[in-house]
Figure 1 (cartoon, rainbow, N blue to C red):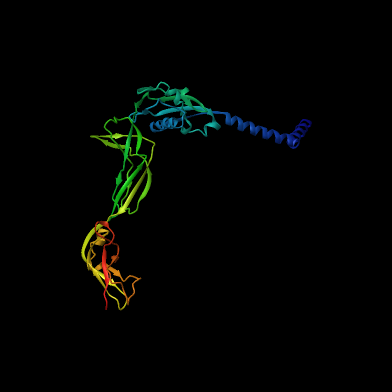
Figure 2 (figure 1 turned 90 degrees about the horizontal axis):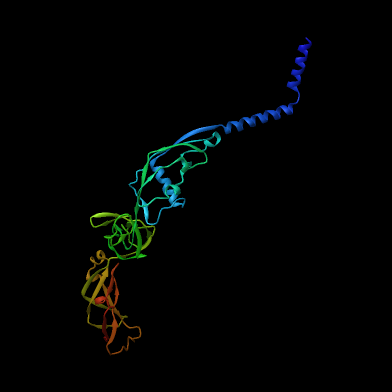
Length: 340
């Protein structure tokens, strides 16, 4: 019994006393467990597809992490392999790692690259990663590099569609008039480049637009691909089509105050009618009102006896313009007062 009493006394002391110390010990134990669990290593394997590998290289070239010699480009005929990468690291890090975080030291891989076929072998040390690379597998491949030709060529308007009926393109101005393009193809037969297609279908007003250069052109019997970052500003002037008709022997009427009269010589003249073709085609000679007025400074009771020149005036048909022949002003006629 004394022994049992001693055990019970020590048990009560262990369970019910020093709660602060027990809580601190529990917290420390939990922190140690989380730390150890986070530091436990694990492995993961990622597959980088051929297109992803190509995009990684293009991105490195565009942001300056890698560079090729001037006037060369990676050939689209390059056959890219899939790359398998197995990494090892702390479990807490690996949970945030995926294939997008795996990249390569392209500057080193391209150090000896030149025009032609360049055998490329990616090794573990060429992988840019925050975790350890334990295995890397891919089929050996050749990076094909082509030289670029450069040429400065005039730019021509690439029209898509036609303006609204009754309208036409009066003028096109392209600035700058020339651009410099590069290509892996032969540029010797290329005399000009085209803008990207510019839609004028149904347009009735002039406009201006900034566009790039069409990437593919016809040179002789073959297509030529060109590249340029330059853009041009295209100003397209669209005007309404104007038709013209000559109307002969249109009578000149007189407008006089009550009790006055005028004699007109000649009594009929020839005029030129211009405007939209569909509008002037419907105009009849009687629709054109030509007239002269009694001069405001003439006295009705005692008008001048001499002949006076007066320019004919007009009330034009709707949508049309009336002028003299050969786009001249309306004709001048001679008038004299007629006594009642």
